[in-house]
Amino acid sequence: MKIQIPDYIQVLIDLLNQNHYSAYVVGGAIRNALLGLPIHDYDLTTDATPDEMLQVFSSYRVFKTGIQHGTITVLSKGQPVEITTFRSENTYEDHRHPSTVSFSDNIEEDCKRRDFTINALCYNKSEGLIDFFGGIEDLQHKIIRCIGNPHERIDEDALRILRALRFAGRLSFTIEENTTTAIHKQKQLLHYISEERIHNEWVGILETNALSSILTEYSDIIQVFIPELKEYIIQDSLASINQSPLNANIRMAILLKDISNANEILERLKYSGAEQTVILSCIRNSEYKLSSKIELKQFLSTLNIPFNTYHQYRTAIDSNYQIENIHAYYQEIQNMHEPYQLKDLSIDGNTVKELGYQGKDIKDILQRCLNAVIENPENNTIEYLINMIKRTS
Image 1 (cartoon, rainbow, N blue to C red):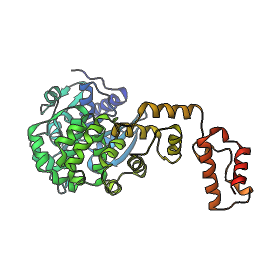
Image 2: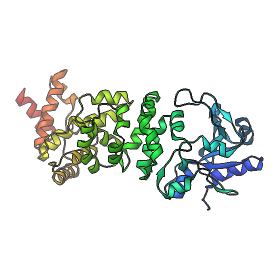
Image 3: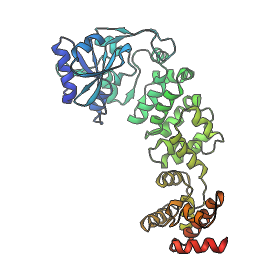
């Protein structure tokens, strides 16, 4: 089987081969190539040690960020490429990181330490596709299977629990029975994993087509890091999840909308400020009344996230939400450039200040002006608003 390797990758393999080292593309790139999916990056593995790689690529720009683990990053034709020395299995002390890193000259030994069979496929042009653990067959049967003993693989690195769910969801694969058993049995090992790592994998899970089935079949796993997500909350969320786009923030808002400490959960899972803003804004406005264009403009004046995001969230959770009407109102507001924010007013704080007002009064007066032009956009003129201020002062 021939796999197309881009020139910027092949030139690195060729250079290693010319210096009498073997080299392979390994992992996700090969998996995706066989599945016909987009390939986002290529990882290489080689029997050259880090010091030997530095000599081979002495004419390239090289980053040594992972060199203590045998990884360097080489800039090839403007593209960063990670190259890692073959490694052998070692003991793991914290269910995440090996206690020591031992280099190997054996590609099978290197593949043996990887997580799943479908991620341990190797390829180069001279040897073709190499599959030590039945990864090709598992791809054909759409199966996620740990390499070797799944209990050992998960004990080594508990993050593999969430990686299995993410791959199963993203690829619409089934997790093999023994791997599933190990995942459920060893779920508490997730307590050893940093919240940042859990957050990254969880976002990937939220964005999969199979999220509903994952929430149903693996709720006990998710409850390890979100114990507030009780079974009844999950079940009540499934219909909305199925109506939602593959957007992690919208789906997290759906899951948390009836949980009182949503903000604490987001903080605990190391959600960024921007992510929290989207999720909490959706939740806070879950029942905002939007039955007219004026109400929509009043809402838009306070909304601090893109309306389309909120619109998708509300569409998913609310069967009474007037999707077409609201969308038509929004399009009309945009097309007609109707004012709904303070910055849209034909006057600003300086204008009000010149009329003799100070401090908080300026903000209150501008808000009254905005309310007036939200109801009647034609009133958004300097003359009208100044006269209005004088009349109501």
